[in-house]
Length: 196
Image 1 (spheres, rainbow, N blue to C red):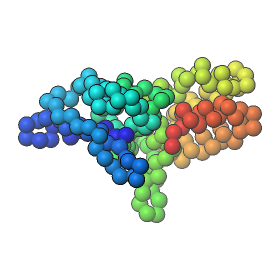
Image 2: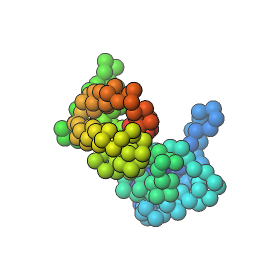
Image 3: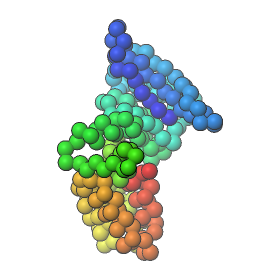
Image 4: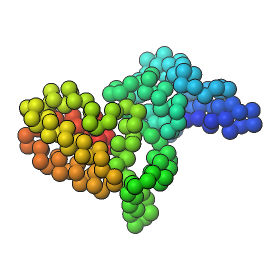
C-alpha cells in the first residue's frame, strides 16, 4: 500500500492524500482520497483508520514519503512488525544525493546501487538505532548472552558505516561468522534489521 499527498500545490492550498495499492493483476488502484486544508499527523491517522483499518485491513507494507506527517501517521496506525514501513524510492534517492559523507555508486546502466545502506533509511520510522536494537528479542534468539553481545557490537559497527559497500561487506562477514551456530538469531536479524 502507498500513501502520498500533493502538499498544497493547488491554488487554494488544499492537500490531496491518496491511498493506493495493487490489484491481483499488478495494476495500481486508488483505494481512498482525502482533501483537507490541514496537513497534520492526527488528520492522516484518522484518514488511515477510516479508509483502511475500519475495514479490517492491515497492510504488510506501506510506502510513504519522508514528510513529517505521513510516515509517522502510518507508523501510529499500522505499527511494526505487522506492517513494514518504507520510504518511496524517489525520496530515498533525494535524501541519498544530498547527504554528506555517504557513498553513492552507480552501475553501468546508471541505476543507483543503494540496497545495503538504504535499508537502514527505509526503517527510519519503525526501528530504533542499532545500538538499542531489540536487544531482548535478539538475546532470546542467541545461544548465549556473550554471543548476543558480539552480535550487538557488530550492529553498532554496521550502524556507523558510511557507504553501502562497507555496510554490505560487514553484513556478509557477520552472517558468515555466525551462520553455523546462530541460525535463529541471524534469521531474526535478517527479517527485522535488514529489510529487502
